[in-house]
Every structure is written in C-alpha cells, then in structure tokens.
Amino acid sequence: MDRIEIHQKAFELFLDADAIAKRIRLLAVQLNLDYENKIPVFVGVLNGGFLFLADLIKEINIPCEIEFIKVSSYKGQESTGTLRQSFALPTNLQNRHVILVEDIVDTGFTINNLVNKVKEHKPASVATCTLLFKPDALKEKIDPLTYIAFEIPPAFVVGYGLDFDGLGRNLKDIYRAV
Ligand code: IMP
Image (cartoon, rainbow, N blue to C red):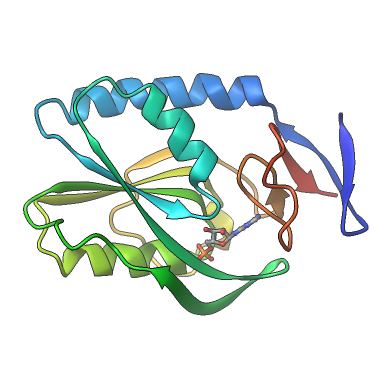
C-alpha cells in the first residue's frame, strides 16, 4: 500500500521492507567485523527499536548478548524533552562493549541520555546504532553516533517499530507524514 491513514492523518510509503532488510544486512556485516572477539552487549531501546534489533541480531554471527531498556519521550508527533524510563539498564555493563540500538534519532535527547547512563557503568566502549537519523532535527551533538542505517529528512515517520500515538508499529514498511 502506498498511502495509509493513522488517527486520521495521511502517510505515504517511504522505505519498503526490502530496502530496510538490505541495509540491515550491510550494517550487520560491519558490526560482525568491528566486534569480532569482543562479545558485545546489544541494548535495544524499547518500544520503537524492537523490530530493528530483532532483524539486526539475526544477521549477527559473532557471540553477543542482548538486553533491553524501555524509555519514552514522545507524545503524538512531538518530543516532550523528558525521558521516562520504565525499566533500567542491566547492571553488568562494566568493561563490556555496549551497542545501544535505537529506532530513530530525532532531537538526540533520548540517545544522549542513554549514552550517559551507559557510561556511568564504566563500559569498555559505547556505540550507538540507529535505524533512522534526522540530521536536520538534531538539537544536541551526539557522541558517539556510530552506525546509521538511513539518514532521513525531518518529517514524522511510522511503521517497522515506530508509532504514531500507539499505532503503526506493526507495519512492515516505513511511511512518512504527507
Ligand atoms: P529524540 O529523543 O528526540 O531523539 O527522539 C527519539 C525518540 O522519539 C525515538 O526513540 C522515537 O521513539 C521517537 N520519535 C522521534 N521521531 C519519530 C518519528 O518520526 N516517528 C515516530 N517516533 C519518533
């Protein structure tokens, strides 16, 4: 479907499932190389990052661990600027190679907050891996923004894990607001 409606708002097809899968395979090749012999811990950021992490991890062929953190800062189409953390980071990140896996970096607030929280655990290294990055929406410098699947314009997007007020996460493709 090229056009859909969610909460009476129109969206058009932006990135299809095939393009997403191809890009994820490439990202995984890079991660497999970069983290060989490091047994990294992938920390998936819920809710939005669940499909991305699930598909990415299936392409990772080195030993690794998987954890999740649940946060939210969005209401409707606007970032609220306050991060709600519903469950905490695992406590055993000391001396580990941590890769935070996000659905999207918009203002940068969420990922920066999480990077700082991970750093408090004294990990061996911290990297971030995001499916989508909106460089024009960025309000804070992100250090580090290591792996990016797609750089996109600042329009609101849904699908493949991303929601619009709770709906749309189950869509295979990614749609953008028109
Ligand atoms: P940031 O803190 O402003 O970078 O926003 C990050 C979070 O806001 C992401 O993890 C998403 O959950 C949500 N978000 C940002 N942009 C979008 C969008 O276009 N569609 C759906 N959710 C978004």
